Image (cartoon, rainbow, N blue to C red; front, side, top):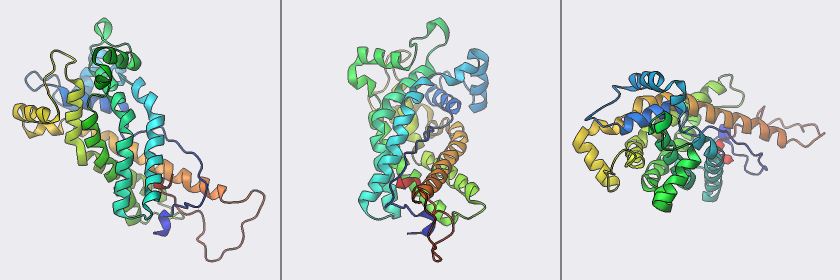
Length: 312
């Protein structure tokens, strides 16, 4: 294994949770959802900037944060699942290789859909509902409760198949890209440019993971918003793809991509860099017995070995 990405799997690891998911900055997600689901027959927004300005003008700054309660409720569990499952799966596979990095990330992405799908359903409905007295839902829990009363468990899990199709490969790409980039950039513990390199690797990984499955995200948003204003239009994933392509062409599957990539780089840069740095130095302290001096070890590299988030 590359020395700069040593997992230190023999050590007991501290619990580290970072309350930032791959979706990232919330206001940009509000904009991308609105762009994804608008009809080209009667478009409300001309692009990312126009959407941003319209929300501010019509609904104030608070309109950008509609549905915020839903991701806040699920972020702790999602991050615990993603980093925990990815690390344990990688250890179970027995070897740190690019293929195993992808498989471990894909497993993490698939499992977290159990929480992610209902959370994003509530978030999407809240982001699209009218402001003021005309609003249908009072909050995330009220939204899910109403959906459950009207449509049952199947309604609460609407979009689960498309969420699985999005999250499984994209999280595989997410962790694979980060592993490959940190190795290629030579992220060594004593490197003065370590943090900038980690930020670059994490941000690029976030962008690549979104690019890998973004059209599926458009389909998921449309399925979860379907029926909110009027009768449902789509019978399933393929029908949604067919109708969307027929009505709006291939560009429909890139709708909202600009706002998604704008948030993807800074948020994922911060996420991976924070997890990696905190784990590296937390493990370095934990490996040292209390009250004991470090024994001389001429052959060992100075400073703690750089820990990957995959070793959580």
